[in-house]
Amino acid sequence: MLKVVLIGYGELAQSLLIGMLESRHKVVGVLRWEQERPNKLLAFLRDTFIPDGLTSIIRSKNIHEIKARKVNSKKFIKIIKKLAPDVILVGSWGEIIKKEIINLPKVAFINCHPSLLPTHRGSNPYASAIKNGEIKAGITFHLMNEGIDTGEILLQKDVNIAAEDTGGSLRNKCGFIAKNAVSELLDRLEKAELIPKKQDESKASYFPRLNPNDAKINWKKPAAEIHNNIRAIFPWIKSYTLHKNTFLYIQSTKVIDLNINITTPGKIIAKKGGNLIISTTDTNKAILAENIETYGFLSKLWSNHYINKKIKIGDYLQEV
Image (tube, rainbow, N blue to C red):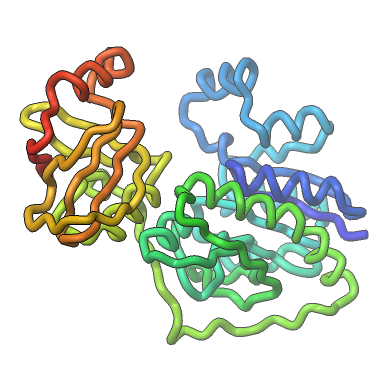
């Protein structure tokens, strides 16, 4: 039985913790990102009244919560030396971890990255893979070093990306396979069955953080690219376009074939309920835009009225 410390936040860390609790190995401590919050009162209120999944599990299972502000801190080192874990496992974190910290566990310091490394390194591989139009994603357990997702690979598991997947649904899929795979990882580490494999740097790719400009829809792009961009960044950012002086948020789309050729992108070809069919630079393909909301405080009440009464077939949508 291995003693394990988990470092992380969000759905990935939650999934890893569930998987470790279902294994025969022992979780001796968890450091969650919430410790970094500068407003301690707000953090306390949120954790008390609306705790996230990771916090709920920690408390319901009476798991030791590591009270350190950073991984790269003397306090964290002191606590880890006392806990003496065999393995430290990371599931989402915001620090570049120093070598002296990486060397603390007896067996290995491991990161779980939600992509099939060496592709899609960086902060949001879910969005990166979907933006790229790929049909496979996955998780990689790799040894930590001082680079960003560059350590030697121990174990990988893949998952299919469906045409309707968003960044959020792909995150859920990766979390599920991480939960199921972490027990195998720890079992094989204990038996010394895993041989670290260097990453092929010639195949490496890196995706920067999402930014507000990613939300702007450019109708002059191919339909598949527009569809992939919109679903990739959801639910973190809502994609938007402009109809006259009104912003429209488009939360889900489909690519559809046209029986006629439309040569001008951004044209509203048809309306169906609260949905719109919009032309792109592909003359024979269009975007079916669904779950559309107008910008503003009363958007949910106003959106259907605006689409039905204010938007006309033949109108054009603009890039902001």
